[in-house]
Amino acid sequence: MFRYDPDMANLIFDYCRGRLALDPVPLDFAGEKDKLDAVLGGLLNRHGNDAASVMKVFSEHLATAVISCDSPRFLAFIPAAPTRASVLFDMVVSCSSLQGSSWLEAAGAIAAENQALKFLAGLAGLPDHAGGVFVSGGSAANLSALVVARETARRRGFPTAGRYAVAVSDQAHSSVANTLRILDMEAMVVESEHHRLNGRSLRAAMNARGAEDVVAVVATAGTTNAGIVDDLAGIAEVAGERGLWFHVDGAYGAAALFSPTARPLLEGIERADSLVIDPHKWLFAPFDCAGLIYRDPPLAKAVHTQDASYLDPIHQGRDWNPSDYAYHLTRRARGLALWFSLAVHGSDAYSEAVDASLLLAKQTAQRIDARANLEVVYPPMLSIVLFRRLGWEVEDYYRWSARLLEEQVAFVTPTSWEGETVARLAFLHPKTTMEIVEEILDTMS
Ligand SMILES: Cc1ncc(COP(=O)(O)O)c(C=O)c1O
Image 1 (tube, helix red, strand yellow):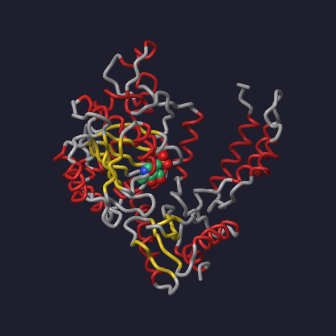
Image 2: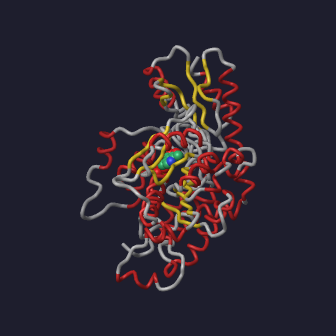
Image 3: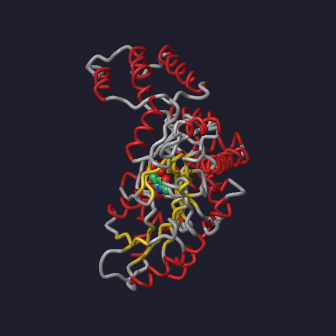
């Protein structure tokens, strides 16, 4: 089991080489449980199987039942578009069993990950001493950050008779509500103006509440549904006045820091106490990679450091242990794929790729408005376009979505907007073209 088998290596490398060379990758299909159960039946047994036959099951039956989120025709939810460099380097991370938990064990990997985090922090305008860790996703990052917000409030003696509360907009990502439930914190939902949280509404909500139990505010830099950036500067202002922890969830949209044209939308991000930005979304890294950056890392360290006798050796020096900055201990050096790709291609290539999606979203909105039966619901701020097909009911959108996948035109899923079901296109793949968009719009006539 532990011997190097060149045949198995060739089998896997050949598959990977083939996949890497696909341009574009096929969209593929959703799976059916009965069929998948049938091909998997009996595969896990006492004696094992020939590697080639297991790989055949994977490539012919399992891989094709996964909709390729790295296809330029995947425009649902939040797609992915990892660079070849990042995917290749991720294989290096796997082959080398590179973990990145403590400096003692993994200084080289951690130094490079921290260089990538510093680069992102610098773009955001955070101070030089800002730092953090790459975690598995935006949800893990929101949870890890808001634990720090809560515990920091507690340490500072923030007065409260009961639970702490966090100000959020009704557009915050679902993981924020989950986080607050897990942490037994209350969500103080602040009404947004046109789906955008601003400082004025936050101040009014704080005054109306009167109580001093609100310890943090979550702003979103790019809502998942519509790509709306909250009024970060105005919210930061109120957070400063009230001593609130200012958390910015830029899991999707903070990648716009790379775009000179979109950067002004993110004004105020530099005042964040904690910031989330997911390279596995719009920064072209493979899953699973989310950057979590703290303005003042020692506050996070005071909360997340795990204390155990067997871990004493990693806490001897003043070294940087990524395990100190989120709720995990062992972790993959998942930031290296971003680091390698950024080092190879340079940040200008990232700016161009982000700008391409921003432009495509704007042009798509124009094309939609030029069609008599289509209507933009919210002018795109970033790279998500919401629009309606006049006369369509809920079932029409779902039928349309299923048909497009069946015909391999695109994977697009409906969403809802102010109670109405509408169509949604999320762009971040640099190879999604206007031709693909027009092909999709043509199916709605
Ligand atoms: C704004 C925002 N926050 C958090 C998340 C959750 O991130 P993840 O899916 O990586 O856990 C998402 C996911 O789309 C998101 O868009």
